[in-house]
Image (cartoon, rainbow, N blue to C red; front, side, top):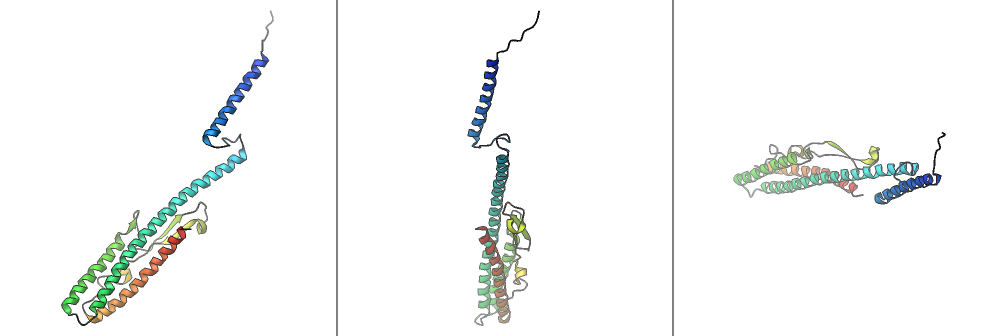
Length: 216
């Protein structure tokens, strides 16, 4: 007896259409839930490639923004430390001028010299202790690079600056150098302190330049 194959063509077509409709609906729902027009390369290969590049660029820019923020925070730490050192130098200048007057005797100059010594040591301490994430920023000249752009061109995408060495020794006003016990020594110290202030302000101006760059 021969075998017969019973096929319901209409049912098969309906089934295929149902499967296709279900897949289309699933894809549409996925797009709606994700907010993306292109879910895979089959939808639009060119658009997917462009989208992938844009997503990478956006992600890189977010990281670069974080890097820029951290660079700004480091510069603020540097500027804050320099501001404190400047205040101390101003006080040391006042003491030098005071000690340079002959209305004071040896005893009074001794008191003033002791204060100046303590202040010089404080500058040294501040310069040694000021740091950002473990990086000393005021006791040595160290080049730092921050990636603040999404590209690979250093001139365009990197912020490079050098930390400052503003220790009392480097500024030339350490405790062993500053002597306010005589009028002549006080006058010499006054000149050294002026030079130290100028050196500090030059370094601080460099910090300000980089802070301004990060604002644009």
